[in-house]
Image (tube, rainbow, N blue to C red):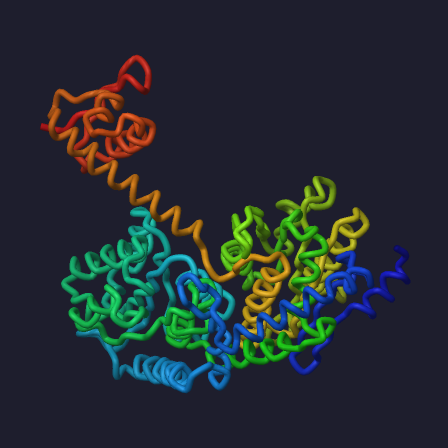
Length: 530
């Protein structure tokens, strides 16, 4: 395609929303009139299904659950007055609580005020808040955010040890819908132990964000947590960032959460348009479907040209891959759908993997995110007439051109500046695009059976560990091989898993498991310290 033809394609396909400072460019995604015509009826059905979902239709018929994250930005659209009232009440409580913490009216025992916030969660209960915290942090932050988002002992020590004595001025947010999520529970227990080691009552430093009546809710009541905020069964973890899950830590940090919600609401309005050519989420879903041949044949490489959006690709990994990666379609047929997401940031990508994007396997498309406003105030000229921001944008435009010249697809989202409003817009855009794309490929975007399968498998492994520890205790210091212990534990077919468990237990002296090497790794004798 000639430069002039590219320009004409750009003008024809550009979606420009000047009031919002938002543009979507699909001119280099291989879209043409037949693509619009062929998929037009399916897109219309997807938009109708989305509208029904917003009216309160069941997203998960088997669980009798709705998907109402859109109501968080427009409570008046909720299907019942009670839900609308709950949303408004929670948002008001979030703002009031943050104001009282900032003013020192809610304070830790023996200190002037809380200066740090420790977010304890996993998956959507951490990824969304982390994205918001990193993207919108600044000199005006009222509290410094920290995260426990795994069940890694060394990770716990790193974060809690880094807080050190400032733990006395740290407010802990425990986020779990059920209260039984192992990673979050473990993080809470480790944090509570760290507070106790410094003579601090965890409950007087803690806030729970959970479902009413959950195990965490009961614990918070019993231990006198400072506050409890709701999680509703109609908000999934990966779409919870505009609920209390994301709003509480952001408001405590000092971020304008009302602007974040307003940006999401504004994008929601655009993505309700029934004219797919003027609906940015529908256009994204269409482009993904065309370039991936309706089966996720190409990965989505997310390249935001702004350091503050480094975590955007991680956030989208969960939102997209947990929503789209499904074994079966809505009719129960095995389809193995998916849309792989990975990314970095510009221009780090130039020195990381653009070489392969330009010259390697063409199994991807790139989603650029461009921010027009460089910074607050004037920029230094690093060369005559050129600033560092000029170089960054030049590298973006150059990469976009180089990829096109090599026959690689890309799209570009442009925002005027990165602020709470525009970040809210990006979050809402991709939430809606994922739902529409799921309709196009005929799968349920709102459940995650594979995640549950992984949790169940982990529970089996932990039960095996309990059995092998009991078998070790019975053998005493004499010990046995992994195969002998597997037989003694009544799990001879699980010998490989037990081998891995024994290796880790024996590598941690405090667990009391010893290892005497044998002729091969599999002849080692494991015992217990006498």
